[in-house]
Image 1 (cartoon, chains in turn orange, red):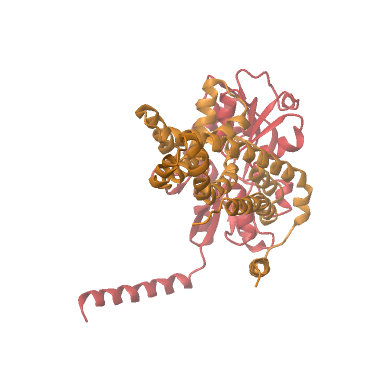
Image 2 (cartoon, rainbow over the protein chains, first blue to last red; image 1 turned 135 degrees about the vertical axis):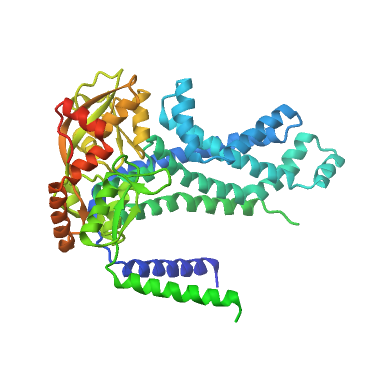
Length: 244
Length: 262
């Protein structure tokens, strides 16, 4: 059986199961109320896409920087990286957002809540990315580096031609997973009144009192963002595959 | 049979009896509220629900001769919970609005209040009408009547929709928003907490009444609740709750001749 057929069958089975569950709930559907607010939902979706893209780039850069700090031989730099990673990973994003916006950003005069939101989200996700990158580099055996040196490669060449291609392949699934989490975590930005997708759905719910009709489009919207990401990660994994 | 075994069987039989006895009585009344709106809905230091609405629900339970279970549910989840049968009624300082009436039924109103403004000291805003211009920013709590009012009537201002009352107050305190639209009592209390940075425009620019939310088909419970509210008022129950939970506010509102409550 080809893979696409298997996938289609499983998706249809899941859909049937969910449809069955919904058909058993005694619920008065009211799609027209939510349809009136479609503009609001679309706007929220747009904001979430923009926030996510910005935070994906930001968290990757911060992650690389933090991984370098943590791996640094300078104890001071290493300490900075360690404290950052542990502080961020050990505290809730909700608290980071509230303190980041109402305390830190206010103190330095940064008033734009969208910018602050992207920064906090990037810092949050960057800490996880740092550990993923560090783990990926550490997983390449020392013999690889030694062999690279033995055939006369410079440190930069050995990183570019030997270490990175292998490390990228190792970290890709984890990075894709982290990106998916990041997109869903962006919903927390609503606590500092960033009108993103989840807040839009919550508002529509509170205006129309149509809970499921407001939240089902929300689930569909997030899938629309996260599924291509997973697909892309699988394509890249195949490209970086090598013979063992 | 050893001691442990015997104890176990005794406990098992005992709990069966208790379960049977409980099942024979009237089912408990499940009252939904969000326990984050002191002094109406809150928790005591031990984490038990308390406040005006909780006392009201308990008095209702005594009137109906039914046990009362308080379900703590986020405000914008209350109506869905009621509609899907997870709770029997809502006593959560909920304003009876035409929009909500399309979705659920309400008892007779039990309390009168209105929307007021918490304004930053630096903001020139003197009335709700002042807020309706492009340079103004309004903070609201999600799903409240203030949220609805701002999004339908004050369309030219920028709207900040927040999850928590405390965050909306903070927006005003830090001057990020011109005003927070909320009920006059909450505005009064928040102004007291931030005297240097905020002003309270307490006179309601829109009057509202609070009522118990019910399923539309549940006419029997509605009649029972209306009867209870009438009796509770006649017996001075609301006066007593006001004296117990809001003595200072009652006096302050009376001094300014602002319609207050119950």
